[in-house]
Length: 353
Image 1 (tube, rainbow, N blue to C red):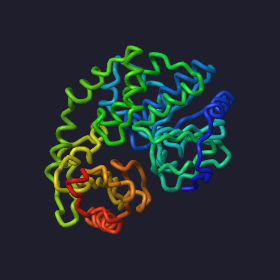
Image 2 (cartoon, rainbow, N blue to C red):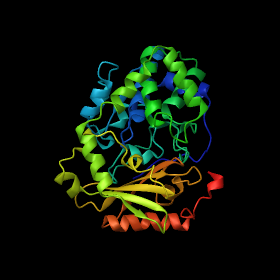
Image 3 (spheres, rainbow, N blue to C red):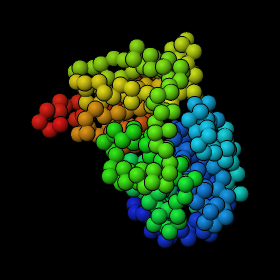
Image 4 (cartoon, rainbow, N blue to C red):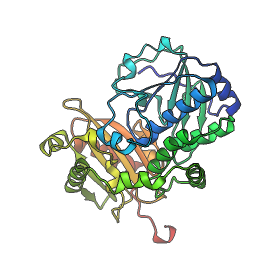
């Protein structure tokens, strides 16, 4: 991919970004291809803000269709219809837009899954993100290492003097609580908790989200959990554990991955006696590509180092990377070898936990 990169590793001021947004008449936001609620809710909240502040219509595109599960979680709470589904960036004429806004993407390449896609070089890019590995790839950047992109966006909106209303708050709170694992992740900071409290003070019912996501699990999620657990293997020597999600296994069990909400590595990250865990998901038949989701078991183990070393990125406790490999075993070996080279297979002393 021909990705424009800005090597100025600093943020623009909220005042500068306000002027950029004010002067944009045809902005577009391409959602991250690795769907989660933070990636969905942050552009939807920004769309509300731009409409309210500047009467500007932000076009939001998603590479795929939104799942039935996503519709169930959001139904009756907020509107997801502004998202243009099944619209990968390679089908978009960017000359019709004057600003590309990318939110919640640690790498610009994450907006597409097509290795041959080339972005038009003359469109300006606004990069709003919360990933520590973000290389500040935009012409304009606002990157803060918070628990969610929605937390970053809330701060930015306030700093720009744009009042966050109830509609925006509904989007923002869902993105924050899900990307923070219901506030169980090491990446959760006081600002995420304060922001959530302020959004709840606006009248948003957090428990409604929690119930829909944790007390109302879909059968497809249950089948996926069964596959992850049945394929789980532990490598005591290298202090890791992993599970494979091969297309044959997925198809044999009739699992509809697009209807699931679980980040598969989260299902095994609580396993004791390991430093980190990962899942290996076959991307598509005959493509020789595997999606790796990494999770740290200890705060001292930075799995983003593994991801970055192999061309991916993310957070210290949660990261991901796509690995070209003929087999899952080859991909697994690359992960374990990289972790060993980084010294991430050393036992963690109990006194330091």
